[in-house]
Image (cartoon, rainbow, N blue to C red; front, top):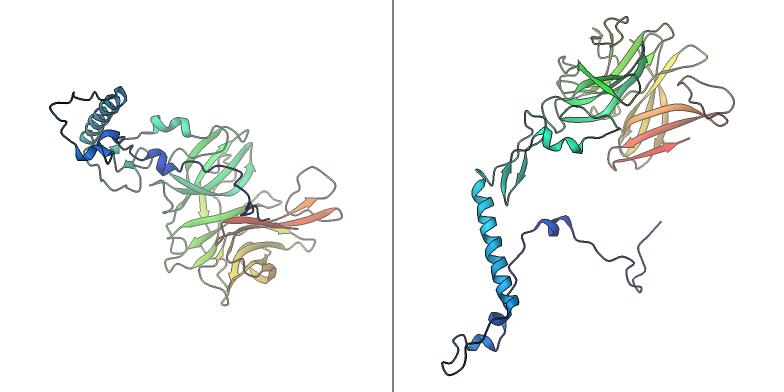
Length: 349
């Protein structure tokens, strides 16, 4: 709905100061005697007239101005490179903070510790985005996530890894997957985990190839008996899915957790677009190494690229959660997509 107030009524709220105005340098207050047009013609008083006494207010303003200029000069003098360009990150794990008016300040993690989240997950340092392949295994909740180990900006995307026993307190583990193959050399991107009935874990993820083509790859734990799942193996036959000819090579990413039907066939969906129509593509498999494109699950014109698609059942009668393969009466299915162009999420039942 349009919440703009009618033009014939006064605004409901007064405008607030912008961040720029709050941090701009204050200007010295003008001297009313020097700016008055009549007094400017008589800068030197007549000898026969008594010298006018300046108001106490003007003297206070002059003193304040002198004090401000002295402090500003001291601050500017203390900076070694006041116009230093910001870097992509520091080894301490925080981005370099540069204030062009006052020079560079050497921020450290200890100074910024109070800014860290107290409840939600956050890596020790640097950039993170999408959570990947969350799962529960041998007493631990596992969270993988898009992670740049080198800087606090997006780039050099790997899979960070952490575990928890209560989803609140997390232990950081070594990086689980890095971009080291031709099919993911430009990024180990978002993916999802599927736990099979026999306990095996299939991790599907998007890789950005050496030619910047988005493909889907398979990885699995090297040792299922390890509760921390420290080592992962990339399937030698990767990629297991490549983009169809009728979509863009850079418009094929983020496979969902697979679900199994009554026919014992596994299916999953992947985000994409066709021209300006956002779509989710359905693939099927019986072994997680070979896949067949089935159809378009859903499409909405004018929504652009869909990414981070989710598809799962929800109960219309129960408050308990459902696994991704639930089916039967009293269940609806929910499709969620993140719109890359508009930076918003939408849900459909």
